[in-house]
Length: 92
Image 1 (cartoon, rainbow, N blue to C red):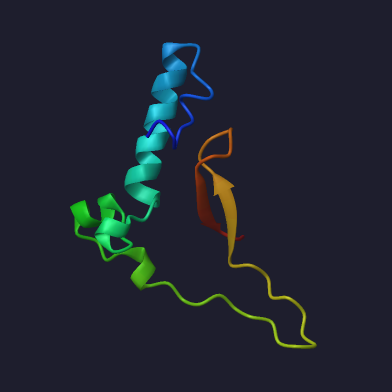
Image 2 (image 1 turned 30 degrees about the horizontal axis):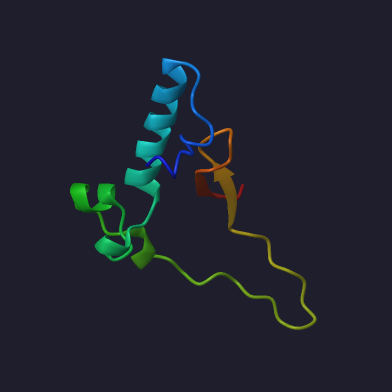
């Protein structure tokens, strides 16, 4: 968790900063980060008995020679301002 939130490199100056980082980090760890020990599922998917999202994933569209690039289905966003906790969001 210390490495994920870069607590050693960027120590929080105030208690509120530490609490905010920990809340974001725990949310990311439980709901968004797939775990190898859980065969690609997140802890929240296992706890709530939900089918892991990676099992419903579809391959991304690929462009063919001479065709334009397809519009992306997802965009990369971040849970934190420091851009250390990436998540995929559906493109509008």
